[in-house]
Image (cartoon, rainbow, N blue to C red; front, top):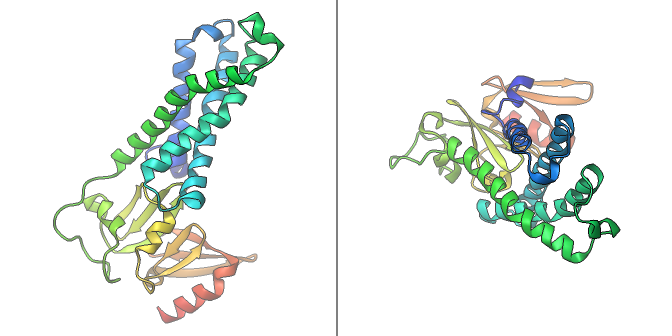
Length: 265
């Protein structure tokens, strides 16, 4: 995937988040809430950009933590909700610090320091809207990329029983499964009919595959060896190029397993 494709908001989750963050920052600068009316336009952009992008980074980090390590089998929407609440909690003292440094206390009583009551009040005002924004961003991305599965059985992939996540692909993309790649808490599914991004955990997707269906070549990538066109080794780095032109890295500790699978393919 090229750099332009990686930052394309219609193709990748990081690109979508960056675009959404810029849009939210512009919205807050335009609305110019009362506490920040004393700031210049550049300072407003810096102030709201810091709040927005810090929250998005915290929410994404919390999402990866919850969906990959804390509760990998949890409902994706429950994990998204938990990530939003956790990110809001961590952001609260940071937001108060940014307010203090860039705007200053509006109430003279606040100048002497923060209290637990103040922190709780800040969290109470921040958590609900921030969590709703995180849910909304995921909903927009998820609903745009996912289409309901048709009642008929899609084209088989020659790997036994079809995994459930294949039925969540757009009908036009349901071909033979070539590769899977983790994109934070989303899953990039590559088939002979193209690629799609769905809301699905990488580990959970691998559990739905037959044990002999393919091989995990990296902590974030799985492939079907039958679609490998070329293996390249250069400077201690090994990559595989697949029949659809996709090039993926092979982790050092998985090279022997990958080589064995390719020999059998």
